[in-house]
Every structure is written in structure tokens, then in C-alpha cells.
Length: 106
Image (tube, rainbow, N blue to C red; front, side):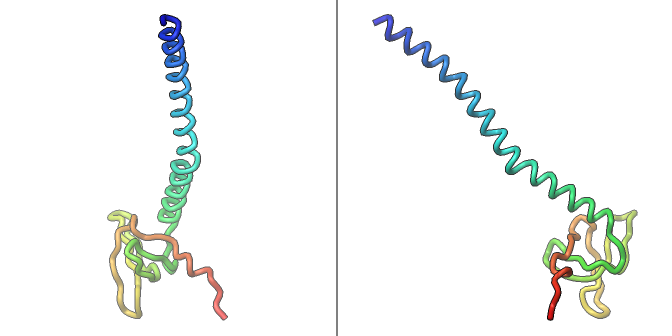
């Protein structure tokens, strides 16, 4: 009877160590497949926002496409022309690269 109890205690101790190893492995997988790519993407967006220039085609966080007309670095505001004579003011953090600007049309 005591041998069964001792065997159960030994397997429980080994099971705890394997559980910790499993948790570390799971965190490492999540880091390399989810967290790290998101950090790289965020750095790329930040780099684009810091390199904004007048005349660039952009899209806002709300999905509005336009052309940068003026950049106010002090207040972090970008003026974007969305139609001829229609200019909106958008926070610099909500301006993203227009992925359709590189598409060639026939």
C-alpha cells in the first residue's frame, strides 16, 4: 500500500516539472508566432508615420483615403485632402500607408 502512495507522489513531482516545461514552451511559441510579429509591424507603422511627407497617399484609421497636404509635427496633426478642396485634420497616429497606391491599373 505504501509503495503505491510513494509511486503516486513521485509521478506527481515529475508531472509538475513537465507542466512547467510545457507552459514555458507554450509561451515561447506564442511569443514567436504572435507577439514578435506584432511588435515588428508596430515598429514599421511608427517608422512610416515618422517619415510622412506632403503629397504621399495615405489611408486613415477610419478608412478614408487621401493625400497629405500639411503636417504639423508640434501638435501631431496631419491635414489630408480627401477630395478636391476638401481637407480633413487627422491625428498622426491614425495615418497609415495606402497599400493600393502601388497597384498598377490598365
